[in-house]
Image (cartoon, rainbow, N blue to C red; front, side):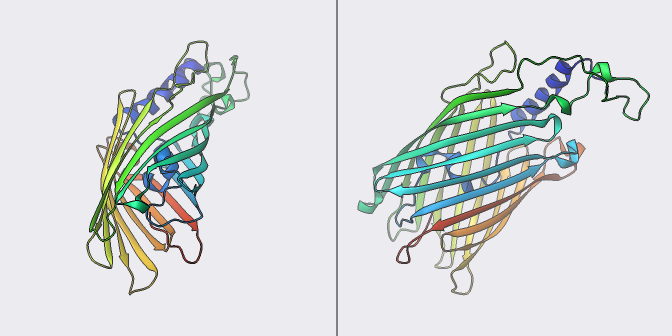
Length: 333
């Protein structure tokens, strides 16, 4: 396809990304959203419920759309948090990179929470959280081709050695960002079910993310998530979950369940799960858990209209949770 200008190419890229976001809400979202705890809800910072640990490290890596763009979209996340009396403190960074055009979005946030109701004194747990930090967006103009570079003589028709005749006032943005959330969980000590629900709002400052003189505010993202721990037997626990996100008329609905099965009375649990992201993908998950440490792998089987281009190929994702704890303590999220 011959691009009439750099702006046309940018427009097509934005339209493609927006189309995916509005219909599927998949780009730069995580299938294992519950493993990226602080990116899900600030109120979960340092939250370990009935039994506490000293600190927690969470990491996640996702790669997708390699078969469509040649260069995959990738997301990398890492966080650290810890409890301090009734407070939780921590932080995270998440980096999203789209191979085409070198678009990159980096977000670093400091995170804090406060336990309004501490379930050490009863079955109810209620916390609120706040995050503040920076968001950085950039793109590399050298990754594009331009109409002035079209010669029609090469295999692609473009000679990238020719000048682009394009001038950019800026290719990098750095803005202040803030998020907030609330979380509730009911956990009776000997109960068989422990429901929970959370609500969070991201980009409360609505920073201007435009690379031009025309202002474009980053819209608020609303996240509602919930579920319940279901104790089926002494060996088996099932956690049905639901996630709903809304941002500027784009929405995502993800429903599914995770299962934990104890392996022959050891400290190891096998993890298995199945989710469905509405009009987008079926997600299968597998992993292993040992005390407070767990490793999971998930794969998206594409069910959207984009499977015309990628087949059933979707995104592969890896997550790791490591909890540092004292010997007399046990971790249970």
